[in-house]
Length: 94
Image (cartoon, rainbow, N blue to C red):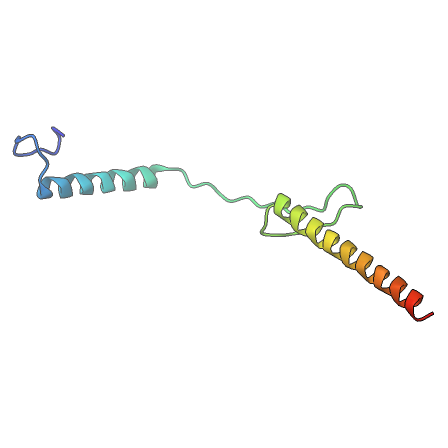
């Protein structure tokens, strides 16, 4: 408050607020520019265990696992329904 209250009235007016905002912006830019630039490192390797699928995805592993489990469950459910239908058809038209 004392740093930006130039007229010493105990309140920050619009001009003082803009001065404080500009100082904060300049300080943030200075801190950002002083940070060391980190190089992005990407390593893609085939898994050690050959039984595992080699999947490259932008999605996290947990999301992929959930997706493929849902697909497998849906396929199994469809299989059971179709097998039941085939058995019913065989019983009905035999």
